[in-house]
Length: 437
Image (cartoon, rainbow, N blue to C red):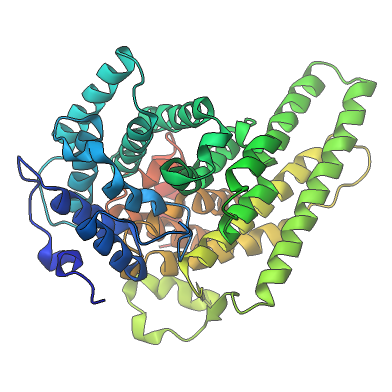
């Protein structure tokens, strides 16, 4: 079946959010930015017929960000313009239009209307989980595209976790909640890792039950393997606090246990990478890209700048997050090496190499056909890479990360500087980059 004309990109998108947006209007805007082209036909057919064509609900290209948006067209509450979900979708559509420079109107009004509706809903009781969860998920995507929304973003990420946990793993086995769950689970796990806090998603019931009837994709299998990283990081923080107060024989045992956990997880990451790089799903390095070279890349020429490409966005997400997880483990090993009397292997050179891999992967994730789902999945690995490259003192590599962040901002992800560099280091980042120019 030919793709519906309503899903043709930019030229067909209206320049403003109308006062009475239609379902087609809102979903066209969102689907174009968060679904790969290969999946839009399925969404278009379902939107036109009211029946999902994705019976197995296994996305062709599972990914970190936005794979759940095709669920929106099946939610009846979206037909009511005064519903919380309708207001949240309107805010997301407005943000997307602004991000692609089609509309210059402010996204503040629709976003604030949605926030107000959410507060009223919470004050009056939670209501339907299948409306509340996607509504908050839409607001999270908006907050990635506006500056200085870190507090709201953090609160809403935590809230989605609370909503899923209250629903329970059995409710996430099939149907709409399953699709929302698998679409948002990677972000919840990454959020836990960033906060260095355990997550309920690491409990056996939450690893097994939601995938007991529909097998996990390779993306979900990857996160199943490493969901406990956040718990290890939390234990590391507790150990560091304990050692700073008083070193005991118990803390020495804890150091050895954590060392074993880190070594084991690093070995499993190596196994994943070895398996993937010897498969048809491996990445490749592109050394010859003179047709794309411009003045913004001139600083990279003496460094043998490489671009890494992938067979699809799924593998781009897996590899960049695999490298980020490995870097985190290497850095924790370095912390342990100062606390243990024996030498702990901490391959700094490998961490730098992996950080460069992440940086060189940004050209792929920022391609035009990656919509917003490619750029929006890059902040966590890019921040991990930035921390290593900045400490290494390589100003050229640091400058390349800075240019990637500039490109994220140009694509509409205005939270990128804070997400990658942190909330308080704007000036120091600029100073570091200026040295290399």
